[in-house]
Every structure is written in structure tokens, then in C-alpha cells.
Image (cartoon, rainbow, N blue to C red; front, top):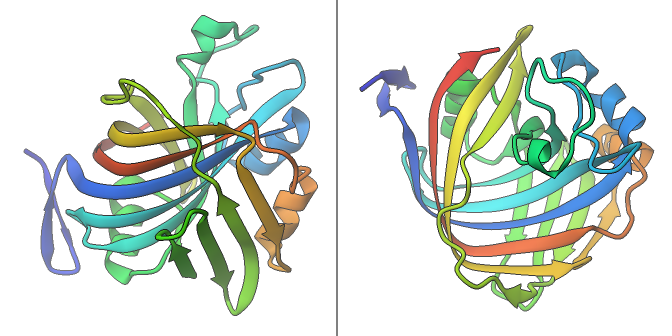
Length: 237
């Protein structure tokens, strides 16, 4: 089994998360605007409808895992598998991956591990999560500036939620695009159409979200009260 040395600690692969709470919302955005945001990666967005791409905003409380406990926020886009072309029907969309554009965290160890092992675009930020109330809330600040304040209202239980189809996550760092095999097991999953509210601040990422057309109604919001995850080795694309 491969292992890596991070800050004097040995981290084995795959990296496992044994318990996390995950809240996310998917937004329809203009495909041309999303393409402009991720052009540096060499990847192309997946169009779920003609001219429409998907931007995902997610916040996570990692409660038990190989990279310790920490909070994380993510901004990501649904993307085509590298090398694919032509229209994407429902079957092709199932092959789509997730390109992680921005991934602030609030702890140094996971910051270095995420960058070193997979090329994740992790940065240190102030991430306040309020998960005990009926609304799940994330207040994200970076460099003393508000990025966003996000509320998610849990919806109806998803029957039979368990092992989800493995996903390919894509990253780009130091001129290299990588694919990361990522699997999730979910307990306590709930879904609500719409279900999310966001207030944008004055940080450059807030401006980027505004240029994508946010805030707007989400396609749907998802909450997972207990998630287990596994992250494999990164492969250069």
C-alpha cells in the first residue's frame, strides 16, 4: 500500500474518512461562464441542458478521518471525462466527473495533505458551521472578507441511500490536471428541491459566483448526516 509523509506523519492510501456531515447545493449556470472559470484546467463542463452547466457548493464537517477533524467548503463543476466529445445524454452524464475549483479548509495538516497528495486547491479560511439547528449554515470568510453565508434546509429522506456510484474528482495544480478516484457511503441522506439560500460577500470568489449568476434558486440541496469516504491515488490526466 502506498504511503506519503506529510508534516512528519505517514498517510496511507487510500485516505479514509470514517465520519463526516455533508451539505451541498447544485446550481444551474451558463455553460460559457463556467467554461471561462475553469479554462485553466483544460477540462470542459458537462452541459446538463443546452448552454447550461452545474456549479456545486458544498460544506463539510470532517469528524473522524485520516486527515484529522476540520471544516471544508468547496466550489466545483460537473465536467466531461477528458477526451470525450459530442452531446451528453443521460448515459454520458453518468460518466461525468467533478472538477474542484476552490477548496478552503480551516486546518494546516489537511491543507498540506490535500495539496501534496492530490493537487486539491486548498487554502486556509475561517469556516463557521452551524449544523445543530433545523437549517444547516456555513459562514465562510477568507482574508478577513466575507465570501458567503449559506443556508440549507434538509428535505425528505432518500430511501435506500448507501454506497453511491464512485466519482472521479479532478484537480489542477502547478500546471498539472489530475484525476482522483473518490467513493462515498451515505447514511441519513435528505434531498430538497431548491432548499438553499446564499448571501454573497465582497471577496473575489463571491464576485466569481455573482458572475455565474448566483444567488439564484438551486436545482436541489442535499444533506448527509453520516458519510464515509475514500480517496485514492491521484493520476495525471
